[in-house]
Image (cartoon, rainbow, N blue to C red; front, top):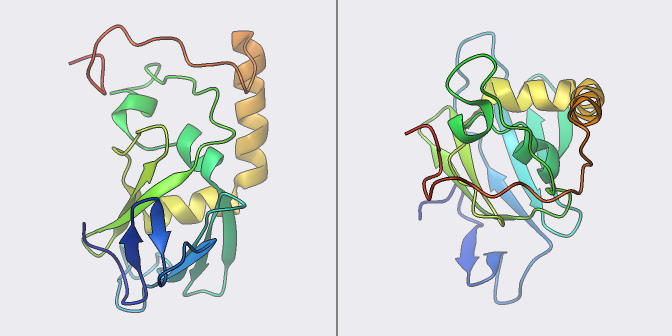
Amino acid sequence: MRRLGVAVSVGRGGYTDGPAQSAQTKLNLSLMAGLSAATPSPTEITVHQQSRVLEVAFSDGARFRIPFELMRIYSPSAEVKGHGPGQETLQTGKREVGMTGLEPVGHYAVRPVFSDGHDSGLFDWAYLYELGANEAQLWRDYEARLAAAGVGRDDPMPGKSSGGACSSH
């Protein structure tokens, strides 16, 4: 598994930055480019395992602490977003989700591997910025969707009807 930066190595339980397990891991992204000239690019990504947040510093000076749960419930994957409008799957039971891996995807995104096995979302720089900049509104929207569906944030996800990650295939 390829990692960003030279300070990161992977141990059996997730990230390490030496012989002992670390509560955080810093990734040097100074060589990564944004999606366009207008898209701020990350200058640093720090995975905080204990507090379960991804801290991202951007080239425009913005810095966000994005909870793993928010990333998981708003994953840009087909499993979460569906293949078109109205096909979204409301995610529940993700409050304690961890991140067991974080892989670069070209020069434009990262692919987190979550502790619940979800690993198909590609988070490009613009989407990470959007999650960070709009976190409060995204939480409000999520809570409204939970209420409309009559489910709780910590309710378990219903069982899948097929063994695949995307049940429509």
